[in-house]
Length: 360
Image (tube, rainbow, N blue to C red; front, side, top):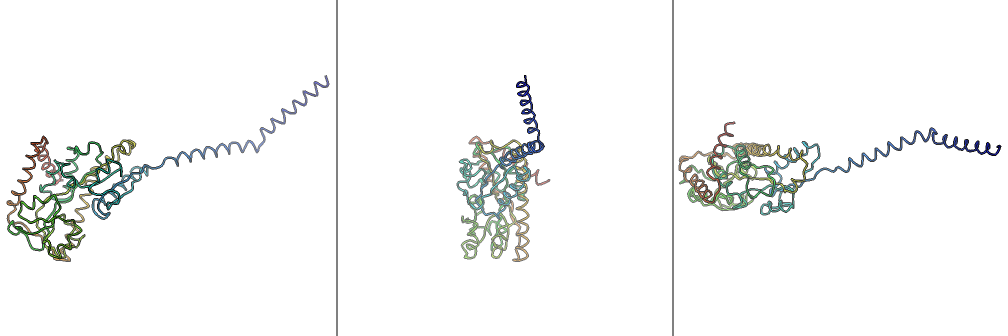
């Protein structure tokens, strides 16, 4: 009996010691702290694993040009509106893709997004050839809004496998010349620097077009290779052309249309809320680009007048110019109708939109 009682007493003491150790103050306070620390560590790991979505955006011209300024604005807006959920890296100046491989580069995912001029891809955008022609656009903003809506209503088949991000246009090109040009007679045989898309128009007006890049214009004017330039007017200041070209003929000619596209797989991978922000930015960026260019043009015109005595020349026979230029647009419309494109409808919508946005 004594042995049983003694054994029982030892067992009870052993249980008491274990219980006391398990509920000691130091252990009781440290356990929750350890648990809290582990929970915090898990939470921090989860947050840091949510890296931002990174997109690359390519363009062929320098960062100070108005389309590239639009790129920067688009980047800033997208990053701000997604609260940093998206980060965009810009590659202007042909540092990733050039003009001649921009859209193929996006299709092949060399970059996620690319911006280029549709006229640099002959035959790919047949309907846009109609809206690029002289149509009486009063400003770059109006041209951009019109082109943006036309692209939405008549999306180019060339982009069926890509997502259109935004579209916009330059202001119309104007004659900038060393001598005043007020009539077709004044223009006859005059050598003028142009971009490729202007060739048939300037030939129809009787000029002698010379194709070259903007970078070559200043030297060509100074050496007498050409007597003028045909482009949007911000170059009068940006390239200091007003030093030698002191006349601008007040007759709007062609515009150049820009379209930015995203690789379709990249688009499909984006969350719905990010896609919604990008869609919201489409028209906004088109209008921003046009309005920004208009402000640059106005600054350039004021500078050219003040610093170099630039004069704006009015036409003496505007109807004759309209007749020659207008027939080219009509011919293109008829040609595209024969090929099965809704060219007449497109042209009608073009002038409807020009009137709409000109009166806003």
